[in-house]
Image (cartoon, rainbow over all chains, first blue to last red; front, top):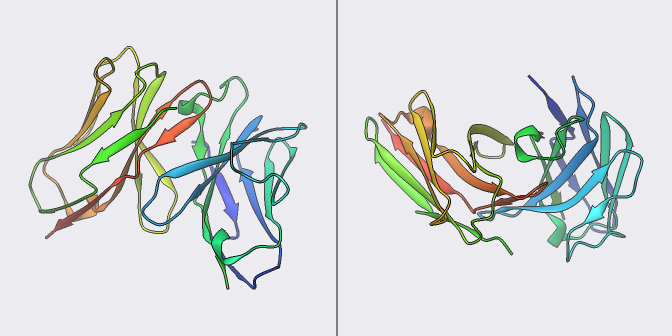
Length: 119
Length: 110
């Protein structure tokens, strides 16, 4: 089946530093990738949708200058949290959709998540 | 804006019990509804997906039903096992977005 990986799985950083999280589709090409954030005991919230080769579409309330998304290839999307602060500590999950899936939920394959702790 | 509510927020049962998890959503104009499992600190595992035209789906000991008109879905777990302990998330979809509930944290004790 379709596999999506994320790296790193855990990251701890100091306040003010930038953190990059990678999302890779290992055995399929992903025209669309999604980034979600999940705070403890809360729902997964969609942050942004990225299509290969174009700018990401951010959800309302998500700062695009703070959460930089690059979908440079059909197998890789990166999320960079710039100047991270303690309130950015969260669980970040990506998902990927193969071509022809039109982004419908049944064609979203989820990564294992990245836990970010900002001290 | 779609809102998804899951009840109960937490559930603790002894092994062997049958149980029902509930999910409700405010906008019945959905494409489909999906149930996921999330283990602590881990990503999502898709359990069942119900298309908007379907009433239920079954996989092993799991059965999910959908009543789109009333905005409700249930996940039925038969003969629960300790390995079923996890958080169960319900998600409803528009064309290319998912709206998740907060989940039901299930603990099945031996």
